[in-house]
Amino acid sequence: MTAPIPRDIPDLPAVPGPPVLLHAPVPATAVVAPVRRPTVALLRLLTAVLAAVGVALELLLGTPARTMSYFSIQANILLAVVMLLSASRARRARRPLPSAVTGATLLYVVITALVYHLLLAHTTPPFSMTGATTAPLRWHGQWATLQILHTITPAAAVLDWLLLTPAARLHLRQAATWLLYPLAYLVFSLARAAFLAPSHPARYLYPFLDAGAHGYRSTLANALLIGLAIYALAVLLVALDHTRPTPVRRRV
Image: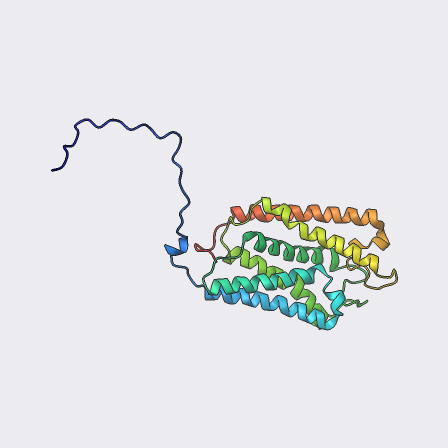
């Protein structure tokens, strides 16, 4: 025989404060099936191949030690690795790479494009990563390599960000972190020049970092201006990432 149900149930005390929502232990992929994106994977693979081809051609045209010391070469190597990993994850429906990594890669290749077209494309003597003293002829090897590294691959990275990457993934707190690599490259460039003979033709790789011609004060001032411009560009990319429309509904 069951006990009778009481007529008057006492009021329970109110829970103080707002309710605390616990983190769900079940991942989203257990509820929503991941989607493979072979088209996205193919496009990113092509970008990685383009960047790798540009680096390989420059290595064939110049000496490996000098070629690997350029910021644009290092940025394109990073782009090739990141795009290859992103292509693999898109094909296998895996989680995308962290936005701190993809955002930094985007920033660095955009820097290479802007610095080349605004500061290096029309210098005298002409800018060359092989030490050539004459301007490269159009549609020849050196000219094509410069275009691949400083125009085509940065454009491909920007299009991937705009058309294939969900919006609002970049964060302002990442912008300062992205400056660490350009700062490390500045230290590397000046330290490299200090170990080379003053008569070495490739002692300074970029004219605006030529401490032999401008002195360290002017060189560091140039580096500071470029650093501020890089930070402003990083903030601009973050702002655009939060205002542009989302091209895809699922993470790729």
